[in-house]
Image 1: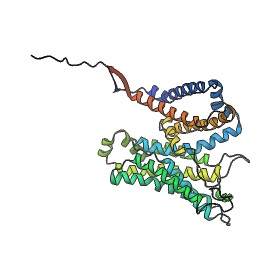
Image 2 (image 1 turned 90 degrees about the vertical axis):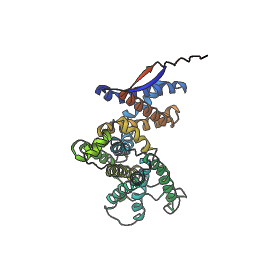
Image 3 (image 1 turned 45 degrees about the horizontal axis):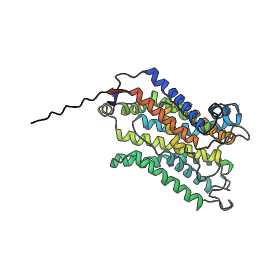
Image 4 (image 1 turned 60 degrees about the horizontal axis):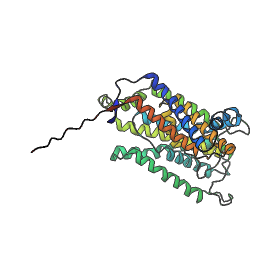
Length: 363
């Protein structure tokens, strides 16, 4: 007996839409079992994770803050994935964007710089992320190197580079030897909507990114090219589309959005550059992109849901003594089920009986 995957002749549109919901339901059941194994009440733990954060105004603001980078990065990654191009290094592009934008905040700190500082920081962040993303893109186009490996390895280069800066030349001399820059001036910080709250204008930028990506994919020739190259590369070549140019374009846009998210995070909720500015936004955004079916609106919804897991995990750690690392386990299980459900949409599992050839004796 042998199990094989056989490609389906047709895909059910209803199942394709329901697939993320099925993946979420399976994840909740699996995590509930993990809670029970840990000796926790599964129902109570799931309520703390997914219900209680929605009943508190501060937690709702925090969900918006966490969702902002997830949505921006997820939208950029979706453009790559639709074109069958694999950017796995958004975390590094996020960090480089934060570093490039912070350079201006550090240089102008304590001066009488005007309102131009923040827009210039955002521009530098996006530019830095785009240029950093172009490194694996150029390696693929020029040398045929795997963009999966190069983009992933560059994450560690970015992280160590930032660590050097905040522990060395950019460290705040009044920071009691902590690895951090000085607090950014008010003109170098993203404004918040509510006095004393943390929800900031970056959330509006994330919504704008979703709208622009929706128009790009649905109304523009470049969006058609992205879809065609991903779905039918041979047809795209016959149509005259340049695959190498598309690799550079999607990587640059993806990196720019990740870099923009990085500087918004630093100039917004954090307020200065320091190590560990990201709890893994660049990697979690991969889950967001696939959970949202690579659709900008779906990514917005998925980003809010994954942000809820971050906030719920923090509350569960405080109230139920559940390890915060369980949030990463939850996200990993969710990605597994999303990919598994997607695979079963494309393929069906068949059981094939194998017949052995009889061996005839001679003599």
